[in-house]
Image 1: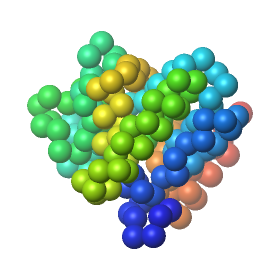
Image 2 (image 1 turned 90 degrees about the vertical axis):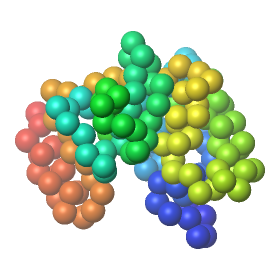
Image 3 (image 1 turned 90 degrees about the horizontal axis):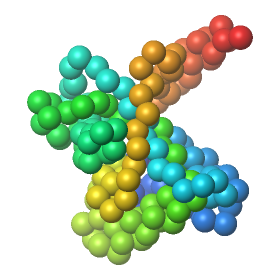
Length: 153
């Protein structure tokens, strides 16, 4: 993380290296040797709150992402798993490069860059509804995740 940056801000994420075979970083997965793809995991709910990273979709394609989206226009919640492969890695890196050269971009959160990418290329979504998962943000979450996966066969 860069000095003075905040978790999930653009400056807290390292720029993806397009020559690597795989470079997980937080909840990001970069796999450049696979065919071009950009994918965002989502969860559909009956209601959304101010802390949800809300998304708007068009036939399964991401069009908008942000916590401030009007709840009456929201289609789902982004759960924080993003996959960029092939040309998706380079496209994401280019969006980050442009944002990092703009002082206003340095104040943006990570999903803002994903939203900017969605304006220039397709980012497909996949629903995790019906799949067991949990969010790991704090140590107690990790304990719960370990208990959950211990029951998997």
